[in-house]
Length: 237
Image (cartoon, rainbow, N blue to C red):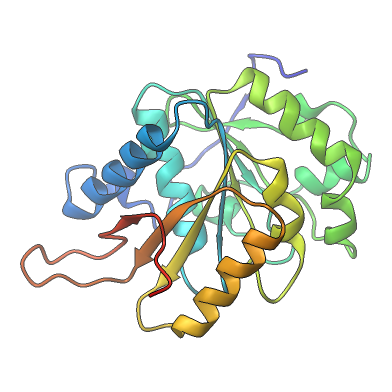
């Protein structure tokens, strides 16, 4: 079980956190819109997975900024870096990655409280990925991972998992059935509709609850803003 007291981390070197660095910007407003749409999509959703079809679509940036916005909305949040292949959460928040999710799943550390870090952003807690293991898919499919998510759901208002892309590896497919909802990040102009449809099909095959898609890298001349102007049920048309 989680304890309320956690170590404080230094995240003053945060990068790619528009919701922290420019809280009143148009981009931050878009994240507020996404957060609101998630809340109104289903009242019982507490665990969320953020993924993409391929690498480089911005899913980690979306996950981190969403975590900040949920915390700003008076939610007690846990952001888990479940990408144990190319972890980035520790870089985004300027923390060390000596211990984390992989440490717990390989039983090198039994007490999960020693791996969860409390950020300087009020109500935002971080579980970094930990050292990159040789068998991430096997670790994520273990009973220990199920238990971590189950316990986190009891303690935190929102649990966000930053997961690897769907198509290159199986990690996200393993985690999708374990969470209440999945968000698919799609970079505009980065991938084809065929690839997006394939990702949607894969998620459906594992019975993921696909809440919608975030269109990333969208440029609007009127608002001069990037990042996910649309959020909703993804259309394959």
